[in-house]
Length: 424
Image (cartoon, rainbow, N blue to C red; front, side, top):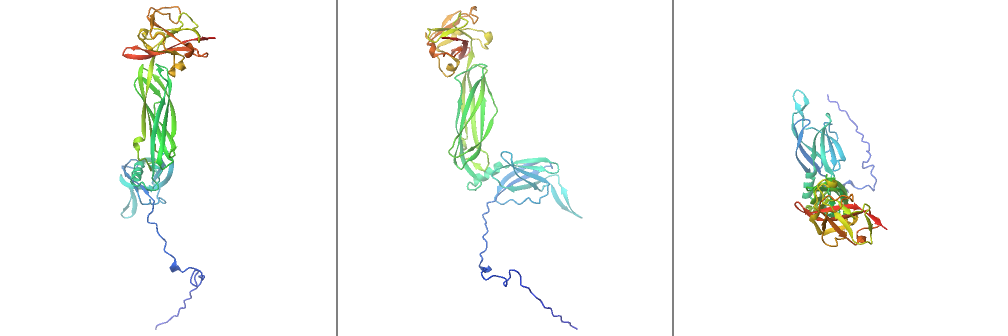
């Protein structure tokens, strides 16, 4: 027997159905399909890393992919990725799966930790990205730090029109050391070096690193002698002048050299400098290291009175042994080149001034020593200078002689001072 059952199906109007549409609602068939952006500018940095153990790994290669990085949300905290910029500031942190962890299938599914393995770590691209540090979370130990700057730089060189890549022609335009006319053995002097750096564009301002170094030749020391790096923001067409001071001390007489070098480079790997040949400049400074000597102004007088309007001023340059009067090097006054002589206050001589020897020659004699009593039997050189008013001022307390003499291996500079009392 067949039993027939009649079912009545009641369908209630649904919200949004045809019965509930207002008459001014658009026809769904007329709504255009959404346009998909197939030119997705998102990029990713990919690092291929081989693990020898949980705590040792090497970087095989790094690159930039034009595909968007997958999300790390939900990744287990096996490894931690720390992304930092060139200043060491953290850009992002995220968890990552370890290539040493692998599923195995047997009587049941489980996870095994392998002795070694390779894997790719894919993170979102950032123009500020510098390094990726991979840390074992459980051990709280850094495994490897990946330098991603070369990969970003290579990408920007190949894709100069990419919106994340910039171009700035940085340059070192000048390295200008300023130093006294001479330095005396064992007496430190100050040298100031001005470096001018600029950005010719087309993009800017650009964060740049300026490194300044100095290399001292033999016979001279310099402090500080370690490189110094300064961060600057270089706007297009607006050069910046950076000054740095050094302390220079001569340890040997004669001409001694110092090489001052300034280099500039973009901080970010995503900034390309098309003309790197002008990013470095070196300027050599030659320092005239003078031999210290002993002089005696107004031999026979302990006060050395000087009338600025007086006549010729006598000054004895004394021949001395090494160590005598504290002078480190022996000095033979008879070898003085009279044409090179200048007399003045220290400040005037350091600026290249001073008055010459009026006779254009030296006067050899056994002069009085600084005690104004002793004559030691050496042949000294008595010199004469005027006008006094061109060499000294009413406030000066020292008078000095600068010149050249015949040294053991060639001409050398010498420098000596004595006290003076400026007479009214």
